[in-house]
Image (tube, rainbow, N blue to C red; front, side):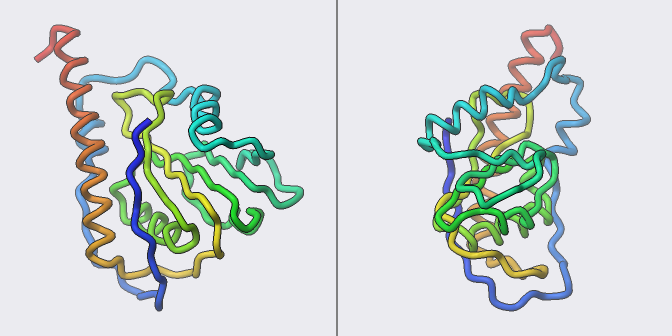
Length: 187
């Protein structure tokens, strides 16, 4: 599992306007004739990968179950990017979240706030995720503080790091799509 690290951030004051426009690779992929005929994420395999790579031995809270205490590890396999669950994360805890499309403005804000709230944040694609899929995971370790509310102007350096990560994963995904299409006899 390859991981790409995001820079740490500082949240100053939110802005009311959002003028950034992005083109999504996911929109392009959806128009391609190749589709997965199986479940793209094997959650059991992904969970085991994260447990071994990040030495997770503590109690894990999967977002689908209601919280009854504070946890040291949270794993979100849902399609929603939310930070409200961080109130149930212990200081120094870890948060793992599935990203369906890491090119959207919503995701950019989400990742920017995570980089503020944790010492280390990386984006990775576990072996348990289909190579034809755009699904990735964000792994945030060493929880420091809750993020501030609002929409923020994202600094240029943060956007560029994320663009580079998205380009790398996008190229890998396109190569897998191309080789998969060629193996089916379609050009």
